[in-house]
Length: 405
Image (cartoon, rainbow, N blue to C red; front, side, top):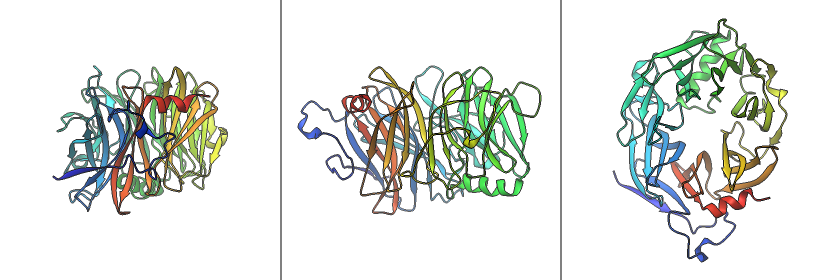
């Protein structure tokens, strides 16, 4: 395949830099850049979902692409760049591996990454793949129609699934070899409407569902489930008896729901949620007891009307310049990606940084880099039509400047 990249570092209309890096003779090509990765397959659109830096200094990007003749679902896409952002290789799944359902997860020895996707030919069962140029299938799990997966604190894997016409959300824990250790089912009721929303989610039609899976530590899991015509977040121990969860955050409708949730420590979480009209609310510190009962609106925060309605929100904990912070990454109504940096202890906003202008940009994900900087991946549209991956790299100095009072 012919593959080329567009270096748009010097186009200030695309990136609002606070300084002119062209005057800094000490900046190396790998320390700061902006790339858009064009592709000659004009019938396909590429969407990045995660990015991680590899030991050689390059970047591994997990995504999906539409336009495949083999599947109604988006197919798995992997791309690798060099340290300065130059394209190195790509992998496009052709017929079986679809709908990536996890981020890039570090392997047990920390030397590489793996991820989960669905097996189209096997009832959308979760498949664990190595994130290499030609992925190796590491395990398949007997959990039908899986919507999300994540690595848990104990090294096992958590899954949320919804079997077609079952009226039950299935939550399971699996080991590295593909065995299912524990599972529970949670009854919903409103099967017809759920089926419609899940089908749209799996095919990436309109707004995807905000699916969560995480752990407070030990056997206490938190996850998205469907309950009484709402999208809810439940807390439970899958090894415990009973069909009811220990704790629950009830949504207000199929649209008003918790959209992102990261455990800071103990019962303290950073969250985001949707109002029923799609406006986004950031809750930078919330106390959520594992056996508590709440509603979606129990957690007050800041409404951000500038953000795209039902925007995908990424929340990460980070330590920058010896300061513990929360990174909220999403996109705006005017077509920019935006990073909000909050103090982890107080929840106060420190700084806001925008990426991109002129074109439409949509947030993918972000990662701290080995040199102390930040890499941000997103989606933009070449010629206003073709969905392509873009990559922004900030220097350590730029990133540190963002966390200074």
